[in-house]
Image (cartoon, rainbow, N blue to C red; front, top):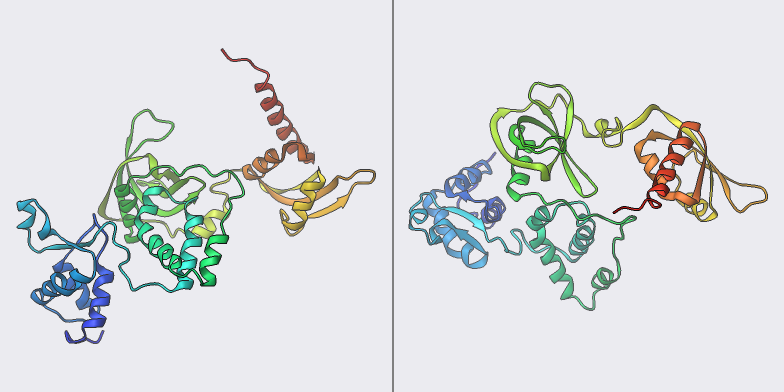
Length: 348
């Protein structure tokens, strides 16, 4: 990269601000100097420290280790820098359209990300909300007041993940490093120690899972982030065996298959459900035909033979009657019968 002059302060400072993490993470002046050099900006440590402790600290909410009340920390060299935990934004002000997108994204992400993760980006959401609130006469502001994301089902509260565990898992995944971990599974009474080769992350409902291999085993397993007791990023290079998330999800990784084949589902459906399926089909090959002498409809569709399909059929309860395949009809009927029986049982 062509080296740029120290006299190009605006471009250099924009890059510099993007390099500084939010507290409690921090970065030293040496690391900042080296990163700027990699970006083509040649600046010595003294000049860099002067820029940080001078104008930039007055314009932005920067925290330096030299301001720590602990004398031992204060003597540390080189100084380490962070943006304050509650700092608004580490980048230039966003546009109104981007602010609207951020507020809409916030509504959605609250249902799929743990609170500890949301807290990391909450300052950006705050900035977006404040910008829209100052634009009372702007159409985008009206949009943000009138539009909401409504979950199709009752959302569970996300499981709580320790910030340091989330940070270490993400770091290991992005840098391709092995994780040393203590993990408490539902099948074990005590945490077990494992060396994990991270392959991917997947958010499913209220839980976020790390997809990884254990030690020298070949198979991929799922680890709920909130069940990690302790993790640490090692220097060992991880082997993800060429993991591809799109292919992995197609293998029914998160929805166990009852059989490897699809099934031809035939069912009678209530008129309200028939209306909904006509607008939002289960699959492209779906057909709905009125049943003579009734306001119900006959549904025919080719669908995966998996647990998600069973869950959907059970959720419709009295609005659908499965006709075939016989195995699915029996399974659903037994589940409904067992559920009904549990309501007639008296517990002490």
